[in-house]
Amino acid sequence: MNSRVSLRLAFSIAAILVGFTSYAHAGPPLICHVIEIGQAKSLPLIDWNQRGSAGYDPKNLTRDTLAILDSNPPVLVRMETLRRAAIYARQDAPAAKELLTRLHARSADSDAAGHSNALAWFDVGYLAETYKQWFGKGEPNPAAGLDGYGWVKKAIRLRGQDLHGDDPEMEFAAALITLQGPESYRQDHAKKAMAGAKNDPLLAKNLASGFHSQTIAELLTSAPAGGEK
Image (cartoon, rainbow, N blue to C red; front, side, top):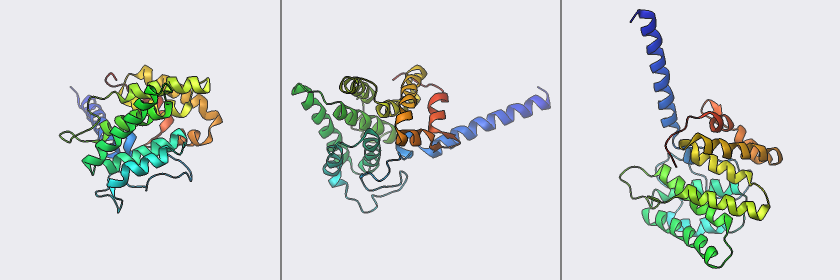
């Protein structure tokens, strides 16, 4: 191998390593990327890599989260609320389990009553996938073995029946979830999210927001596929 080829190979390896290091530093997308919600009410904002709860008592997590979700906020607010909830939940195992259990019971109860609630299924599915990205190996994870993405897809189907069309904010959420899944899934969700963003300024703002050296829209349309979901 000549010196020129060796130099090119060294630069290529360095670039790959920098990419991996940067992504790891950024943290899991469902946790480290703040969803823009304007002035909407949510849980107290907390830095994803902050140790401690910044004065918030996780014992109130289920009550406070449900109060926000039950006020019928848009999907983007639900995403950001559940993102913050997951950060707090990792600091209190009983609170983490209680919140996921209550959200699942809420969605299952809607099925049992004969009125399947799309937003309830979205909430439990999105939280489950966020837990799976956030909790470390060796930590008790209430979402282990759960198909949160499957619940989000169910929510999208139910929501489509309610709206007689796509919900672009739910599609945006599903695209983020599938960043590590099959590219065809992610591309399909991203395409619907971007189409709907034409009439949803806040969603458009989120798609245009930065994540590392690219926008979220670029990330969703160009990130390499990973394992099956």
